[in-house]
Amino acid sequence: MNVQFVSNSKGKVTAVQLPLKEWQEVERKLEAFNMAASIKSGVEEMQQIEKGELKAKTLEEFLHEL
Image 1: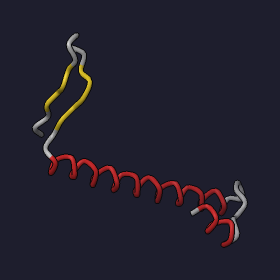
Image 2: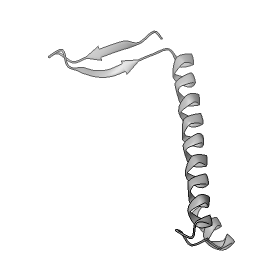
Image 3: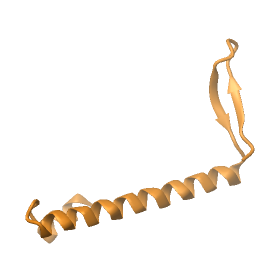
C-alpha cells in the first residue's frame, strides 16, 4: 500500500493520503466487515430469542428499525 503522511509545521501527522484505488479497496473491505458484523449480531439475537433470553420482535417492530 502506497501511503503518504501529511504533517503540520511542528511535525505532527495530520492526514494520510493513499491512491484512490487503494482507498476504494479499503472502503470495500470495511463494508464487507460491517455486513459480516451485522449478520453475526443477527444470529446472536436469534439464538437469544430461541433460549428465551430475548423477546421476539413483530414484523412491524423489525421494519421500524430499518
